[in-house]
Amino acid sequence: MTVHYGNKKLSIRSVPVRWSWQQTCVAVLCLVCLGTATSNEVHAADVLTCNENFSVADGNYPFLRQTPIADVVNSSVNIGAIHYSRLTIFNEDNPDENNALYRWANSIHFLTRQRTIDQQLLFKEGDMVEARLLDESARLLRDQDYLFDSDIRIASLCDNEAIIEVITKDNWSLTPNLSFDRSGGDNTYSIGIRESNLFGRGKLLAISQGEDLERESTEFIYEDPNVFGSRVVNKTTFVDSDDGEQQLFELALPFFSLDSRQSWGVRFNRETREDTQYLLGDAVSEVLHDIDSGELLYGWSRGLQDDRFTRWTAGVRYQRDRFSAVPGLPLPLRSPRERELTYPFVQVELGENRYATSFNFDEIYRTEDIYVGASFRTSLGYASDTLGSDQDRLIVNGQFSDTLRYDSRRLWQYSLNWEGIYNFESDQSEDVLISFSTRYFYRQSSRWSFFTSLQGSFSNNLSGERQILMGGDRGTRAFDTRFQAGDRSLVLSVEERLHTDIHILNLVRVGAAAFFDVGRAWEPGAESGLDDPWLANVGVGLRLMSSKAASSRIAHIDFAIPVTNQDHPAVDDFLIAFNIKSRF
Image (tube, rainbow, N blue to C red):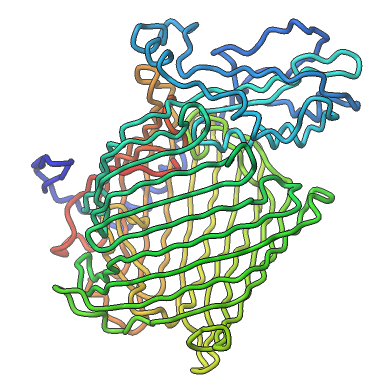
């Protein structure tokens, strides 16, 4: 076979491999049994003393906290002072990072400003120490793309006055956006420049040119998480692609904390794109899709009560969808549905203050915040012709998720999402889509873990431009992207994961995985064109995560062998995929 990597072609001699289902089952069982059964602690519990000249955190600080602040402070104390320890990208106290190149990188990098960090904090000097606010502020900091990690601790406790130390470690924020993605036999790329911490102020500016699975485009993005030092956020996007364009502007005050009492937002989006439909990985139809949409909303809440919150949002939305033919390919067999909707809506959201910190779960040796509570959100709107809609419709969407089990070794979560429209004039539902997913994680040791996920989707009366697909980028890694299409799908993935101690040049963390995938997309009564309707594969892969650049981006290099449909002309003997994901 031929593997494409950028502009290069690598010819690889492929040897047909045949797997029986019995052999596959044995391989899956082996995945579960690879790990060992020991668990390592991260670092010792904090010990508080009265020392105004405390030792501030340095580059060797171990970020993952074991002892909750609530267990350290058992009485009411005031915040006497806040000390900011802003750590550079490279630790010059570490001989492996104390070299001319890394020192030069530190010197030209704009270290995150103290004011930028302060804008994320939910407390100030003179406040009473509240463990929840310190923990939540640390989570807000870790959520910023320009920081690799953060922690907030009580550095000194004298009588009823505490010194709070806010510790942050910067990421390298100015990065050339040079990425290549090969998944399911298709190549994508992106070339550009991205600054996620403009002048140390936390602003994002990105300019890129690239090609994804659908189009080639040039993109400009500007994001400001604290407009004029406030909690207001702004996102502006301009995209010019070979099949259309997009202009997006959003200005909003979100519910930025668990105890937030109000929110508001305004959003405008105009987009033109080509929507393509596929069969066995080949484009079979295409349509030009013009989208105009906007939203104006206001939200309110009583804040956090008994570690739970309820948020209400009301507003008005507008969306118009228009379609036209594209030269070269026919229109979809099922006509796309043109609509114009103007409707008021109301939304309710419920959640909990239930978070845990971990490491080596979705990332590699980095503090991870995991929501382990239940959440519910649903929105209901009514579009009437008296408000400018073309027909009377009821619009519904929502989400529910919960954690079935969580402890130091196990995490089991699930989520349910739904969306749909009911047309009163035609007396039928439109664009109904229901999806379910569950994830189970078992930590066998500090380095080995077992992971499995199950995802399913069901739709009814989708507009002609929409499809539910299955292939290389949707879970079955040995098959072409968009290999199967239908009105429903199901996919199971099983992985044995290894988080190694390898740290290449103190820049890149290394992990590995052995995996088994099986799934399908189908429509009852429709021929799949395959000997076996199920797509199954086994494989191994590397995981590479930068310890110095933007967080939550993990490079996947996977080698996958199909188990089913090996004789089909559209299925290769093996497939090599390279892509960037937000999870391990």
